[in-house]
Image 1 (tube, one colour):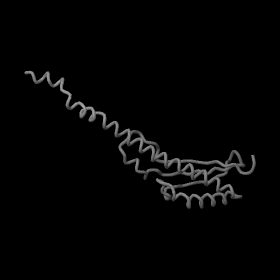
Image 2: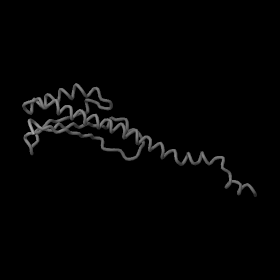
Image 3: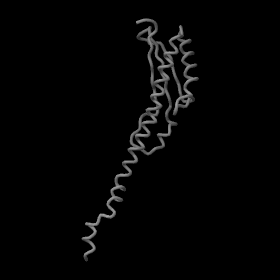
Length: 140
């Protein structure tokens, strides 16, 4: 008869119950932060590659030369970046239609092979990463 009221005042298992309630949310938050870190690392790497390829391509006098220079740079330098698979990278070098004095290097990456998609987390970003860099040709 006195056992039932004693259950409300006992505190031995309170920490275990609190941990069981909070732990799933905590681990999902940690895994989401790790996933976004991997994604942002790949995204930043692609932006750096696009900017460096555009700087390399400025030496080309024609659109074909710029494309060839950017292709050579991207193929040789992309192997040094973590989380980037060279077979899933596509790029384009195009003159700007609104301004003939500049061109744009656009890099797209199919990020579906990144390990973050296997994590059970909150909402994740798009599986296609696209970055670009624009360079002016000539003077000011």
